[in-house]
Length: 273
Image (tube, rainbow, N blue to C red; front, side, top):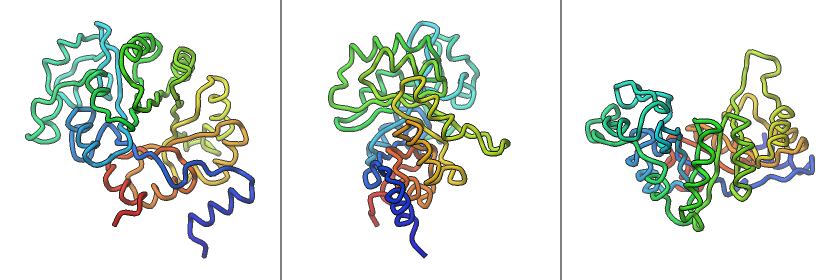
């Protein structure tokens, strides 16, 4: 029986399709090295760089006083233990809480990072994946923030589930790569969105590609063929913590693999024993 990599390569060759980046995927630390450190904190992001991640991914909201902060949920209950609605709170109010003790006593006192805090941690040659949780209102603030920041020696990728926000990011920042995000509704047959529906959003919004939930039961060579033929040339997957699944998406040509365990996945992808 042919191995997965050979079967996939033969499929793309027969179909006359490109297999982009199959040997050089970007390994992105999901909310930082979030298996080992509290998600979306500087402890997690700094650890991700120590684990030799190619990039980090963080979630960003706009506060009531127009500051961009890094937190996944709309409120702070999960990681701070006390509920404040992020978009209705000021940076000062959010910084009165701590966001690390839930993961372990050694992380007690971790503050909520600002966008600038996270950006400053990104080494030259690495990638900063920016997931926008706030929608259109965050875009002009992000544009102004990036204009006053030096990002010449790093790569940026903006991601969002909101099509309008993705389109506006691409309109205002045409030189920055943008991916629309989607999961899959398995209650429908076939699951939605289909490859053609995804490509339609990508074309309509003018973005560079799609970030998909890494479901090996849905995403296969035929799915990627349909994506490419319909005009979506680029994709990344999240959140992939299985070595087997990571290698599968590597061979399918994902430009990036987002994971909670970047050291594990990076070593597997790079062939480190």
